[in-house]
Image (cartoon, rainbow, N blue to C red; front, side, top):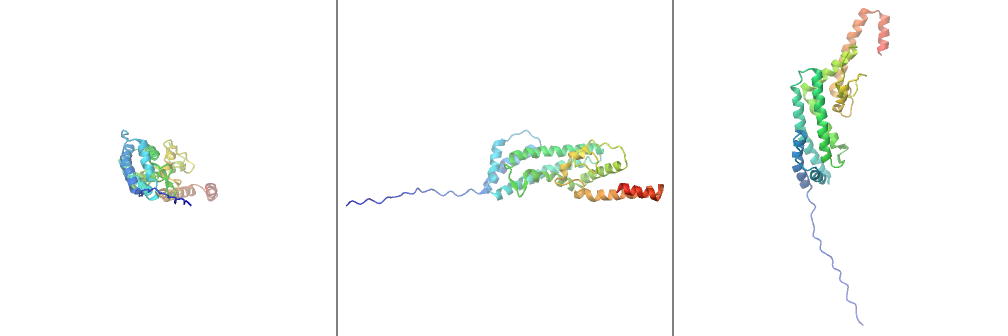
Length: 247
């Protein structure tokens, strides 16, 4: 009786390929991205390939640690150029308020344009750190440096408070430049400040820490003086009607 030879099974030997270190992806992406950030923020001629840069950056999002490392590098590099832009405004703090707001508005909108371009090539296809995207984190850098620059911050604050005082005094105020900076304040159509509303990212101007207390102090000062003047010029019944009307 013939026996059937045993069936031999050959298993191919697959060489083990260790997973690449995620730091390599970060280094490769940053080598291309750092000079691109300089080109974007200094408005230099574009000399980088967006497609290759985009692909290199997306490889860095493969792991959470490498994505966070790349985000940190991007934000730190952006801060260098944002800080320089804010410092350039300090020399303009003694100019006319209208001119100063125009310069601040231009600086802010220019930053948003550049950040948007940066996000389009380095945004990681919607990748986030926690619940924040690169756009979210980048947008917080400008107000951070603005409010840290005391001279620029105080100039902006004084302009806003003076506009509030003028409006309360029923003075004719040119609000056409205040549209791009903040949200409408005290029912005042502040065109230029509205354009700058992104400076107070995620909150209204009234709730921003740098504005709330000075605004309240300004209101107390104004209405105290108004009340004293009204009492001196009117009798008590009229004054009480005035209080009821204001309230």
